[in-house]
Image (cartoon, rainbow, N blue to C red; front, side, top):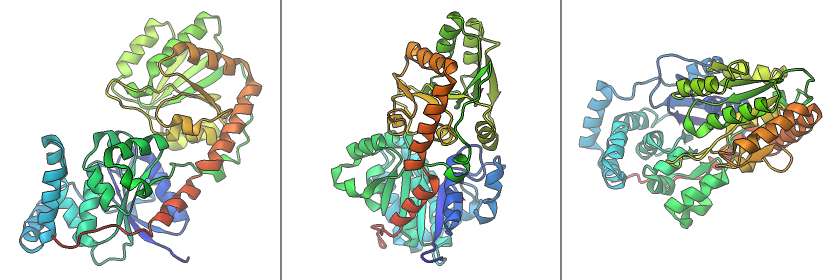
Length: 413
């Protein structure tokens, strides 16, 4: 295949870890386009948790965050390579506080090691997910190896602002996954980098999803699913409040599935019990990604809801892949106008409500519970919306097109 590239992907833990499923799918899309991807996780876990991740293990480099060999090599390169001292200077000057300094220094040995290891291999580009220490590691590896690099920023990593101006300046390009995130990033790094900051959405597999016609089943018990970790920004408490309102108005023909785990589990269980909704809610814990997709494909789920909020710490969504996946299978969605969600759910492709508004959420859910024809109409519109801008293969190709840009890499101290 012409212009085939060999790319290094720096991740937090993928393919060894429970999270980052979206990176697994993105790498699979790049491979489907004919590109070879070498994955280097910053902090690999002990096991591969996703079946699809097992397909990526042979092309991954599993190293601990730090070991004796890395430390010895770092000491050696401090004596013979001025670039390492230059990197140390960057980290000390640009880290905004002591905690961030320590985090960035912790990835210096591995970043230098990876930069030296791949110095003479045919890696054409380094791409990093997350703007925190994974990006610090990618930046270091790029400076040492001379290989151009880029990064994908999501949401919390923009707000954290770990040396982002330095990273954006040195990267070939920076990808934001939502316009809302791009605006926030420009506010941090300055408008002079506008042309280097690209919006390339995350995506889902449309060929498989679009084969399933978005026709809602008529059944006595409508199944509502909330595929989200049990953390504050996902807004589960408002879903429980909304379901209590629906039940109090006499509607008993629904079941709500919470798909995910997290620190709020006990608190949410207590809220469900206090609301008298034990028969309406099932907590499934962490559900394998393939199983969730099968549930959508087989129409085991009628509605997907994500009642996300902006927390007091300003934590909020980007554009959740969980919503894209449901819409790709023609499942109608209800979510809130927070973060970048409004870029996904546009007119007629789903219901968008105010955050922290249980009354609005109850109204939209009750409408979808009653009207199976409306569920089909919204599901079809949502599927078309995802096919337009959130096809993972199209978006992976857009990433590759930007790999031809060159980083501004300092090759000397």
